[in-house]
Image 1 (cartoon, rainbow, N blue to C red):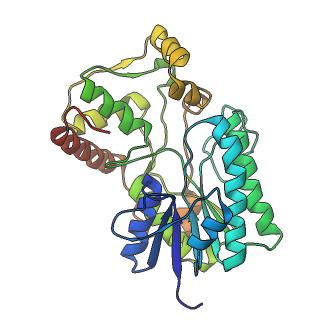
Image 2: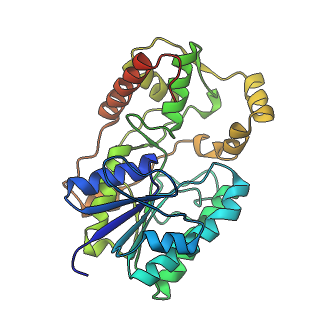
Image 3: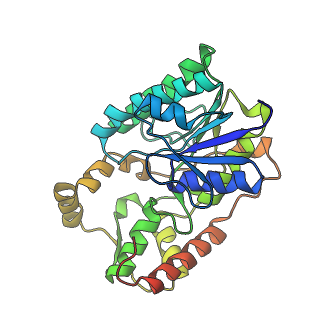
Length: 322
């Protein structure tokens, strides 16, 4: 087929929507794929990533498959679902001849503390269960690529943030605290410089990579701005941009113990806190050398836009912002 058809798996998820927006800006034909809900303003196909026939039907005529799907943040679910999902995406690509772009995180990098700056060549000795799962999934795709079954590109990113992003630790911590009129808590021992990728940069960079013939068959770090702020400063800057005066305070030990003991979401995140225990400087030099004209969003600009969007939400829905 001469005409490209880009199928983005992930529906209304933050990263999937960013990729859809970027591809549409380039006038590419885009389909949003998910089980029940797609990205707004674009053709939607229902496809269940855990059922091969359903997914293959949704991938009909695809030339590019973008795996931006996220499962609930639960280790047991990841262990059960990610291998199946990877196999199904590989099978769909094999059937249609589509290329696969896998949006990955960097949980597989280790041991801790991570080498700084964090490059694509970082050793992969994961220290968490989730990291071991993500390494195994990436290896599934890489092995299929090496066997000649698929064409593959892996794009890796740190945590993201940005306007109206739902699954960002920065957005969630600040927005929830403002809404509930309580302090913004963060553990004092984890107050180090930490790289984040701006959500629109993530989408734009993935689109650039996908449309560049020489980028395939490689692993790429997506672009981040240099000189990230420490976590307390990051939280304060987003709070200020949102027009709030809620204080940012060190998390008391008793509160951290309580959250770990009684909140499943916090327990699931706790094993990943090593990523915040020292400076976390993500290196995207490879991407920036290949795409020197790419304008990476500064933290100042990204935080300002994030805070302004948060302020809009809080004014419109002061007691029910999700």
